[in-house]
Every structure is written in C-alpha cells, then in structure tokens.
Length: 400
Ligand code: C5P
Image 1 (cartoon, rainbow, N blue to C red):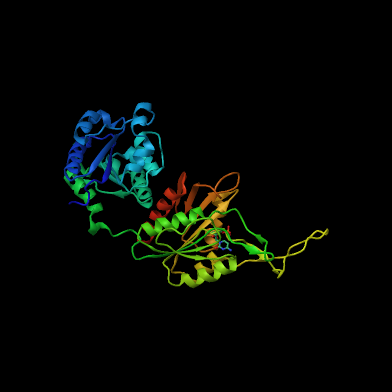
Image 2: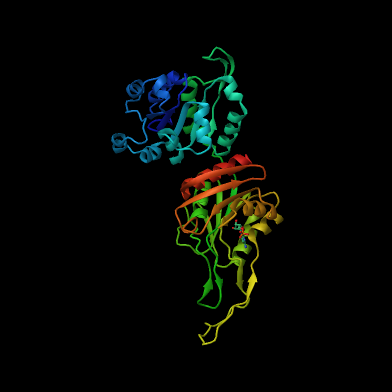
C-alpha cells in the first residue's frame, strides 16, 4: 500500500493558466489513494471551474472565507487542521507575495497561515515575473519560513516566451507529494541534531519559603522543544518551575535558580548543535539567603541583590560553534533593543516579542519579529505551538 494512502492533501489553486493541469494532479493523487480537498482563489475560478475540481476530487470545492454555508460544512480552521500536506499549484507571483508576508485576505492564504502542515508550492508565471527581484526576494522569504518550492521548469510558456516559469507536470507533482510520505523521505529536517533549550522562569530564594520570580509560563520553550523533537532532533530541556508536562520524547532537567540553570545548561551545551534560550532568567538573586524564615517586623526591610550569570552570553562565548538563538521580551523599542542584544550576546538569531499589557507572557499566543544580522522576518500573532514549528523550520533552514 502506498504511503500516501488516506493522507489528507489540500490542493490550493491560484489564478494562472497552469490551473488546468491541476485537475490532472488531483486525479493522480486520488488514484494513489489520497483524500483530496481543493481550495481555489477567485482568480483561479476564472481559469478552471470549481465544478470540474469537485467532480474529480469528490468533495465540494472551497472558495470563500466568509461564506456561512461553507463554514458550517467545514470551517476554515477545521480544513487547515485536516491537511497533512498543502500543495499550491499553480502558485502565482501574487499568491507567493501574499504568503511570504503572512496575508490572510482570502481563504487559501488564511488556510496556509492557520495550518501546521508542511506547505509546498509549484510556482508558475511568465519568466520575467519569475526572475523579477521582488519575486526572488519572496522566494527567499518563503524558503526561510520552511515552505518548499518545486520548479518552475524551463520551456515554452503560455505567453509565447521561452524560459523558467512553467509549472511542473501534474504527474511529477503527484510523485513528489507521494515521496513526502514514503519512508525514504522521512529524513526529518533536524535529524541527527542535538537541541538544547532553556525554558520557564527561575526562582531566586530569599529564605526557605520565599523567592523572587516572574510570570513566565514556559509555554513557548516547551512548544519549541516539542516541535524540535517532532522534526527529528534529540532535545534536552533545562526548565525552571512550570505547570507543564515534559513533551513526549524530550529529556528534561528541572532546575530552580538561575545559577542551577546556568550550571546544567553549560554542562549540556558542550554536546549540543543548537541552543535556544527561551527562559526568563531572573537577572538578580538575593545576596544572602536566610537559613530560617525571615520574621516579620515593624521596620521596613531591604533586600540586597546580586547579578545572576547570563546563561546565553556564557554559552555563546564559550561555544562559538553552537547555533545560538536568544529571545528578547521587550515592552518598548522592540527591534532596537533586540538588535543590540543579538550583537552583545553574539547570537545567530534573536526572536523579539512585545510583552506586558497582556502580551507574550503566560499566554497561548505570541507575535514575534525574528532578526538575523542581515534579515528580518515578522510572524503575526499566532498559537505558540504553530509558531514553534515555524521557528524551528527557520532554524533548520539556517543550519542545513
Ligand atoms: O538580557 P535579556 O534578559 O533581555 O536577554 C534575554 C535572552 O537572554 C533570553 O534568550 C534569555 O533566555 C537569555 N538570558 C539568559 N540568562 C540570563 C538572562 C537572559 O540566558 N541571566
């Protein structure tokens, strides 16, 4: 039985003349045993009718984001979750631009943004449009986001010109999709990599019953650990106290204070390839920890604080070969502060997110800006688990 048997394939069609070939693609996938749903942009419907695709796929074709009847049958989030793989064929220059920038102004772009499934594109356009710097810059952005592009092929084009811009043939695309599910294609993007992650808050003891801490829930770090594990990595999570279970297959080392986290992380860093510091490490800890519970008095008390070690800084300086990712939670001047941090801490990549005013900490969603020395990617507010997969795809693309 083929590995694609019963897999859920969402075929997206954007508005290009190559759309007629997609009917053949859907037919081939069904012959291979896949279940296929089709989503078409409005422009695609000018090139090939939804009725044709409905007849071939055996399912109603999805075209509208705001159609109550269609939403009642299968809502767009449900459809996004249903997909094991999304293939956009043909992917026009305009669709690629919208996808690269996270637009959600029609059903197909919304589905792509709302899905955790791998996204594949079969670009098709006039050769000059393909080689245009704007399109090429979107191609780079898409690759950084973990989207996989197939083609375009060279040859004669519908517009009469000859060059790169033809969509790959339907049968080629069907085989390509099938190969994504076959055992031989199971070389996962982080196979063989060792990923070390810090997560959660730290607790800095004042006395045996009191401590200083912060509002970090650890959700982002745990989601990153789970995503890295699912992408084939061997994951070690050094975690402060949180109310979360260790993700399946992840080795967890529980710590309390910044000093303990520092010690454990440095020990593990030596055998790691990638370090991701998501922990909200307390910057200071009490200079003297009382042996007994400090008694209440009528006098005001003051607490002397010492600076804690900077775990990320020490790891990146002691292990320059390690791919180091930092997080910058900021309440103001997000990009500026994050850039300074990236340089000061010698990082390969920094993920900046606004916090405070009900953003970032202790929430299920996050909105981030990803900075490299010479690039910047914005990811819109989304579920931390979806975001974690996208972040790890970006990291995988950087190191592979
Ligand atoms: O300097 P700041 O605390 O804003 O830097 C944030 C980044 O540095 C995060 O990735 C955090 O996990 C890491 N960090 C650390 N050890 C510290 C302070 C921050 O690893 N003591």
